Length: 425
Image 1 (cartoon, rainbow, N blue to C red):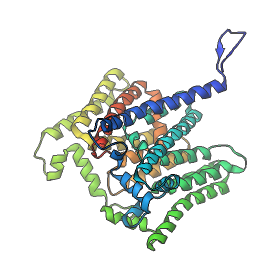
Image 2: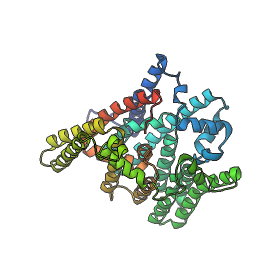
Image 3: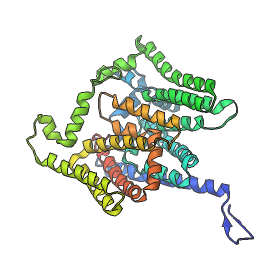
Image 4: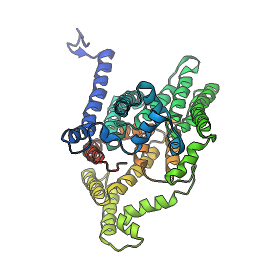
């Protein structure tokens, strides 16, 4: 507890007090933000408007994870990496209801732990103010909804954040790096992009003059992917069955440029409108005119950010809200992509090299996806982007407070859409 200093007569804050205060802040931010996410879901279920809770979450990817936990992965389900459903299977029986509850507990618990790791990382890098905003922006982000339902986002975020954090610890004989490789292996068994931790950990070892530990960490991370390949070989006779399974989802196996039409469609939906894009002709002039005006307003806002910061903020916030109202999900998707690229560029030199490398490699792997669907939630669960968002927010308080408010509104909107089975992310 705090102790009185006889010389100053003031209450002095001890390290123990600071840890308790920070822990309560992280826990409180997590709990309050989950009310915005899970509250509307539970309320809709309680009123009988939708399926009972948690059965209403048995949609989209959750269905596949529960099926894998119950029956194992075969055919098209081999596209889903196994660690998350494995944990569900190991922790409970194979009843659908129990697996859903376990999935909720695992996702929310992993997210809470990830927040503690992110807070510690940001505080060590930039201080307490940046750490607090990292937690707030991570919590009150609409895409954090995927960290509170049976999806892999929170587990992946926890494992990658802990791996990168351990890679920076000054430990005897480089045990921190070796531990980071073990966590990297688990991340690579959770999501395909976990493998890009390998070069990041190798660079971390070289930067700390522990090259062999870096090589070992990268090798351990690769074991996660090799284990998935082994399971695929056992199930289908093809170690790359997780890639071949993409055909069942209408995708060309591997990272390639076959997704360019999808990116062209997204750009057309943002600039010309979904209707005009679907028709292949501009028959509705209102949408492109409105979007051109809003984009122009955004450019003016950026140009005036130093000379007239209040006017710049007002114009920029209006342009974003109006763009969301007019452009809907495509506009939001494009905004998240642009913001992620902008943060990684802005963060060059502000964040350790291994973190930056992991961020850029993750971004490129997502951009090479053959579909823009779910790109926002994948970028959200990228550690360097969240850390840099917190640092940026700590130096742009007016924007950070607005993002918290707008993000909370979107979180409630996403929750209500999800409760009715509508697509989110």
